[in-house]
Length: 67
Image (cartoon, rainbow, N blue to C red; front, top):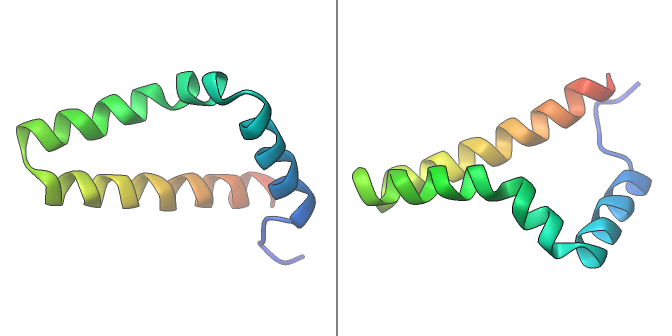
């Protein structure tokens, strides 16, 4: 079995985002606060690295959880 996110899951996630943007913003608010705090305390470069690391880590968590 390949370690990929299937098309059905992607379409379902996009449907939830379109239907409930407030809920998605609430769920992501800790990450937004963390990136804003790092940006304010350390700088934009580190905040960008944190954002990339969160995106890669979240994608890995989804793929590994399915496996």
